[in-house]
Image 1 (cartoon, rainbow, N blue to C red):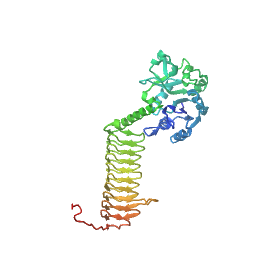
Image 2: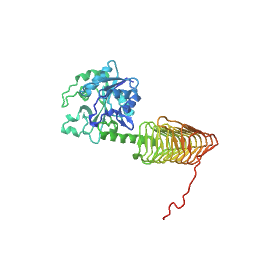
Image 3: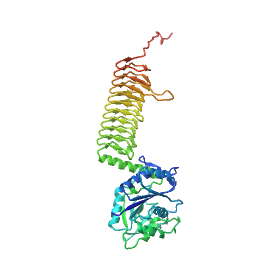
Length: 454
């Protein structure tokens, strides 16, 4: 197969999104637009990649470098149109022989399969100029494909259209595959004799020899959605969510209401897991098999192992939840929490940087921070690990099968041995040996007649 290089046009100022950030640095499904496109391009395995940048170029280059270890970039400088941008990109492809894929950086929904189809058909037809087209519901704003006897003979930008041409439904997708040597010569013939006085890359079509077939691949409109406005980004979130839910359902995941969940691009979900409505799964979260994620729960950058039940409105961040464990409702697992198999973290329990062993139960109203809790220990309601003295954080360590009575405070650093028992309402200020009972004796005083009238 012939070599393929890529020029990504990523220099725009993104004025229509009305943001201090380039639109390429905004997220769809938790992933930056330029990153999503770059990951698709990487799967295509191009021989060389060039990014044409300008606005916020350092941030864009940094983002691309997370995916591509080897790529080129060039600063477009003062923008003078798409042909000008491509001409700048060609400065990095002087010695390249093959075909050049040209596309904008704001089309994150473009699939690998469509790109592979474009490359294959381009080569089969021995074309020097190929492109993607689509038919949106409203073609306003897009350049139109002009055909004669069903063969493409021109591309006209929206601002240059005559009234009768505005009725044309087939639009230019702005993605091209062009024979490199021909492009390097033909691009010098483009002029800026148009209303915007820009050098339009689309004018290349008029330089194609009449005996060369122009290959056009009709593409689903959602794959070519460009992200120029906040409305486009909202549409994009909907498209990506539909793509993700479809992928997971085909793999055996159940969604009670797929229209009312939020999913990000890098999550993984095992088969036979059920996702209820209003759930948000973010970052690099991995959900195992046979889990249930109940309504309103938010899970980010966490691992939920097989058979876990996450009850309603729980928040889990950068944590690990073991097999067959129950979390919630209304639990908050803050970063670096690890919950062992068959454990139970219940109503209004908050954890932070805490490791809870197999079978641990903390069912009600507790804060467990900077703690290590051994297997099968029971944490009573209202328990607090006092881990912070105003300057430093300290660790509380509980052995196996420790029982902590309700309304207890453990002032770290402190260690409680295996099988120890802490009485209700106890403040632990020093270590408790194994098998011991720790209490703070208190005397109850009853005052007779306290609530009687005179």
